[in-house]
Length: 115
Image (cartoon, rainbow, N blue to C red; front, side, top):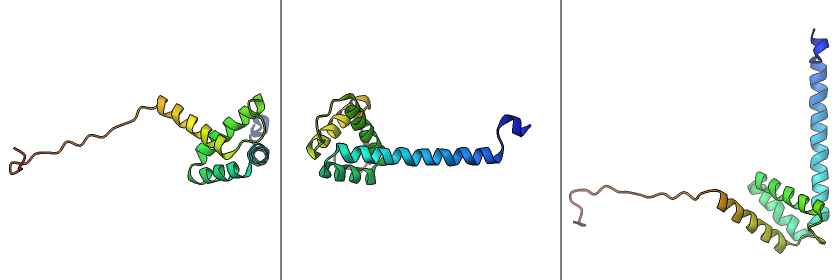
């Protein structure tokens, strides 16, 4: 019955192996595209961002790749252009999320001098 459903351990191992190969190939393609789109200084800045926040770096790479595929980029992206893009993304993020503020309310004791 397992053979009929295609859920044998060999098929699961093969699909997991194919998935990992596809992911490695996709990451390599992404790195190659970033190497052709970004200049050296911008690539270094993006790699430093990836060290601190891999998720944010992935978002920036996705935006840059989308812009390149749609023809919005002319030539290589400089470090200043990358900084401007990061600022735009931060502005968009701050508009969608509300900033939380913490208010400290301290108790006043009887022997406070602030009567």
